[in-house]
Length: 207
Ligand SMILES: Nc1nc2c(ncn2[C@@H]2O[C@H](COP(=O)(O)OP(=O)(O)OP(=O)(O)O)[C@@H](O)[C@H]2O)c(=O)[nH]1
Ligand SMILES: [Zn+2]
Image (cartoon, rainbow, N blue to C red):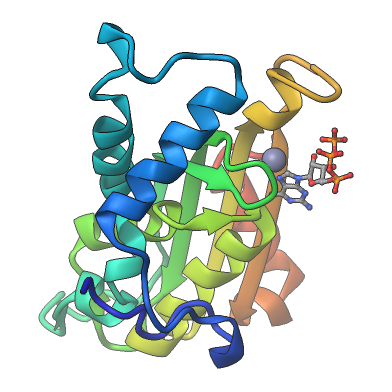
């Protein structure tokens, strides 16, 4: 049996306790292929259920990790640097939880340290981890911010996501090229409008 989902979803009653077997997951893909009018036994599709399940393991691998493990160790020796750290233009992809269709975007993540900093790559890893779960853009924005607050205990965090939802461009309204902007602020960024403004400017979201 595969691993039990640990902490996510956030509400324990929403967490599944047991995953279906790989064979059941492959059978589900085969059913979808038949449902769209395909013949899953033809040569080109014969291996597709296996491939899709393998791809899902990678695309949804974020359920197998937790923020504290992804963020790893923190550093204190930064010559007393205590000002803003902003990692911008972190490209990410995720899938919307309504249609399971890709969402492609960029994240800008800032924090104000309280004596400790993170390895810079860990911020991008955190965004990637949450992207590898089914998401709404709003939830993903809040999850990145809360994970940084809980793990690093900085004075403040700001998280901005800009993304294109392919469920809006490839289907439904078929509105090509629109992008959605979400931003959330914790600590001093939430309390001080000047800090918010400055981070939006640094991230290139305002002139
Ligand atoms: N707030 C929010 N909505 C999202 C996100 N991703 C997709 N959606 C929206 O979720 C909504 C689901 O609406 P429903 O009416 O239940 O589903 P639907 O019939 O497929 O909707 P349409 O996309 O309008 O065809 C749609 O308006 C999507 O655009 C997201 O990250 N955040
Ligand atoms: Zn969607």
